[in-house]
Image 1 (cartoon, rainbow, N blue to C red):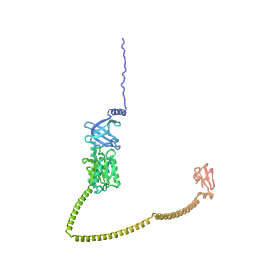
Image 2 (image 1 turned 60 degrees about the horizontal axis):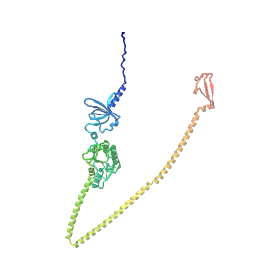
Image 3 (image 1 turned 180 degrees about the horizontal axis):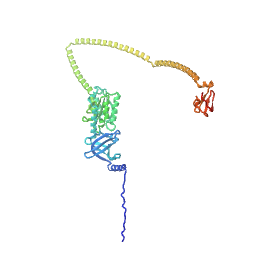
Image 4 (image 1 turned 45 degrees about the horizontal axis):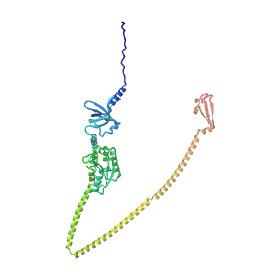
Length: 457
């Protein structure tokens, strides 16, 4: 049996060649599909903010590190300011930055580990504004002791405004209260409080401003821990009292205000304190006066009881006569004073009437019309002289132009010879036999051809 040599061709292995960008994109799609929502804990380092509003940093622990990017829309929602060394918890999706082929975490939200984000934001803002001097006691202004009107910035439906009005009516019924209604919590609360402060400052109706709100959590008081409210309080030209929350609650508005009241009710008591103290002092003086008057009346009765009735009647009659004479004298003096005041008023009215007549708009209008007519007449005369002078100057220039016109020379029998390009021929050397020339006469022109040229010699 013949042996057959069979030759088999071994196939070569095929190679898949991928462009770099395609491989990176495949890895990115794989990573984003498997890790669309993860929480990562670590320490912030190499923090930097871009002009675009993006925030870039590295999240690291003892064994590894991961680049993180926080887009502008998410960065604006942070309630604290990220810093290097801060231990945070970041939520986002894992992706690959194709231009560098680098894995990164695209953050959606971030919160500090340990302290809450609101508390951290509170402390950071407090330190920032304190460093700027917004909390300095030197810039705090005292409250007016006797305000006529107080403006209060609070909710119109809460218990705060009712308690405030009850205390004001009880302690100082003559004090006016102007309510500027705002929402005291929520997304738009800080902007409404800022606008209310600007409105009350610009109204010219109030002497002092109170910002009031009941107690609540740190989230509920977020509007009064905002930078824009703090700066609006500092910018106020009127003294501002902060009465936010309970006695144990402290907000950024409390530090920025000219005076902090533990509660809204305490704010009402502080504002009405001077008036209330005076009222109490007057009440004490009135009580002492009544006691002294009763004592004097009692002593007078005792003295009168020891005086005979006839003598008492005589003294009473004498006293009444003196009082009547005094009354008549005061009446005469009052009549003289009234007559003098009437004469002064009549003189003042006459002077004012004369001043009004001198400033009568009809007379001023007539004077203005006369002045206008005179000015218009002078203007007309000036224009006529100017036009006449211009006519004379124009005639002179026209005569000079006519005298210098080359056409006048042509009138005397001379002619202008022009070549084909319209250039004046002044020399025989400018032309050659066969050239076409145009001769301009005083009346018309003709074309000729050069047959011969001769020099002047």
